[in-house]
Image (cartoon, rainbow, N blue to C red; front, side):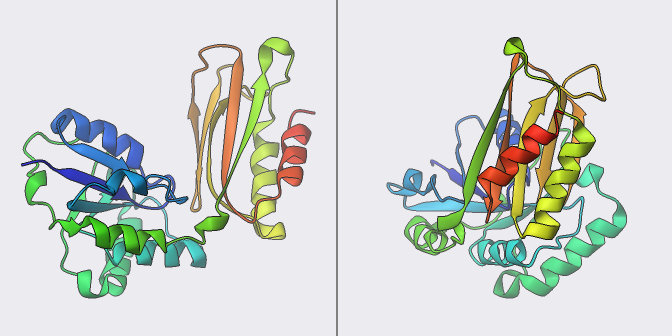
Length: 248
């Protein structure tokens, strides 16, 4: 029997990382990640049924009303919920999400939940029993209407250190992005990239979600770097100014 799994969840919930780990456990299973621009839905056109697993990053509370509404709509059509990065979440954050799910899952409140530790997936996890299959046609119809997401934006910023680009002041960059959210109404839902900074010798990986910032040691394969910013109501000109001001 063939299987297809559709991974949903807010940007940065761990879908790509989970997909990589799941491929080690079940390499023959087709796994599709849903992005918020719905670009991946065409991959479901020829399928009859799919398992739909929604990933939720439980490290932080969700404090964005629009992101919360998007997540609720994702959960309306779900086979199972995967609580991601559990090993990095304190007990208060985990309790918050369990209570949030009990309150917001509605008719899906009894769907299974799986606590995923980012260190990997256990070989004895019975993933085939995790949640019921959903009609692919019904999923496409439901998820295609998910968009605020006709207006979901992706902006890419490039740094060529081989051509003399200066390192970024990490503190100034993050302060500028926070100010863009808090003062200018930009909904920055995802930031991802690796850059050189004035604060550290080694390159720094930046991972931002609607909930949080994470920075850690990164790696550049050559002297070029990039930073991608995703979200709603983004002002490209303003964000370019933030990038430029952060290297002065």
